[in-house]
Length: 169
Image (cartoon, rainbow, N blue to C red; front, side, top):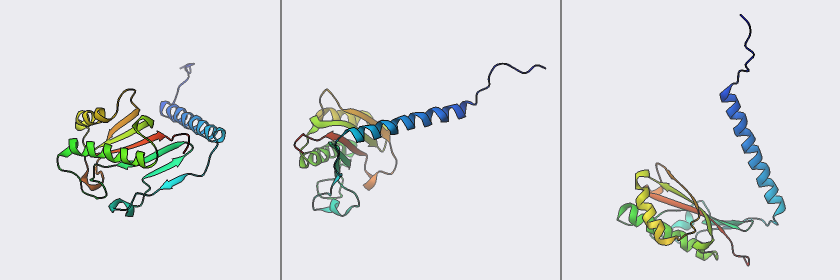
């Protein structure tokens, strides 16, 4: 029997190599962007006084002209209490909490370039979208939405975002 002249490819290995190359290119791109952008040390902003201030994360971090806002639940301001009413009420409050963090750091919804939405049940995505469209207008920021089990406090939704800081910041 003659050996086959057709090359044999190990597809899982090839996929890993392509993924590794993509990650390498992304890393190189990020490093180049950081080196070409005047940078300062990141600024970490704790939550204002209240129930959230004791939690082990910053409410936002400013770095290289961007504001990274930590995930916001639909908890009532300065408490760890979720409003009654399920996803609709929590979505409205989570978005209001996000707006409040943005405002404390000189930003508005118009400055948001990316949102990430975590839903306890992806079937509630249309209900979240209804609340989202009440606060965001076109052109909409880039956005990802995914289902996540076990959100803090038993929440139905969590929203985080990245915003561009105003030039004076």
